Image (tube, rainbow, N blue to C red; front, side):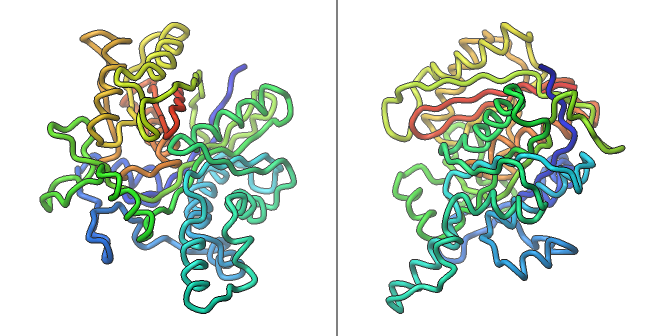
Length: 364
């Protein structure tokens, strides 16, 4: 079944849309900043462009920051696809959930021994997908899911399953993450994998660097409007791109946070796509900048492609590691490069705590 990508959108520290993000990457501009409380380098979205209908929705419903970021990226995808006013399913992945609302609600509880009535609905993971459904006025299936750092890729998997099962003709799929809270940053600092503050002109997150840079966390969202040929109602500006293939697996990692030293799961998923569709022009790795994670993925790429793999291009130096949004953000970056004529195909990897692995192939 051919799956057409009729629209895509993104928002991250690299920029409020795919075109701006691409310009940022091309210019090599640093996009990280220091977190005021922890002093750690983070990739924050500055100046979220509340305007028009989104501004009114945010004022009326006060959604979590993860939902706000999702709204901006999703609206770009829906507008480009020409889906405004049409019904479509929505599946969104998020590793940490509505973190800002959860921590704010709990802080209020500790200080006042009570919470505001809206605390419960605002702190549920499902609230992110429901905010999108409410905003777009859809009545089809809407759900949110969490599968650690590959959450957004699993949203894509579930969306593809709906399309292939004939349960939907159009799905909006992607990931959103807003993890830049003190408690979350301290959790990652405690793992001893967090990046140190780099020189002002350098990136904080530098995948495959020697020595490893460590993980620097970012926030953002990326979405795609996917449809079968029957449901293809793309707008005049819809990209001519395709979700060509996907592969997934589960491995038993040696630690709760790691993958096997040789990246056995990544080897399996990449080999499957290589066997079915041939070599991609570019590999966009998951590689979050950690010593073990980067080494495992490098070993997997070498095992599958030998000593002459396709070019490996990471966008994390400009977005940071955005957990559940990292896969979709990498896909939107690849789609932007395809539309610019830089490449014809890209293989994108995502892995997560617990050993889950997803690889996706997008083409012109």
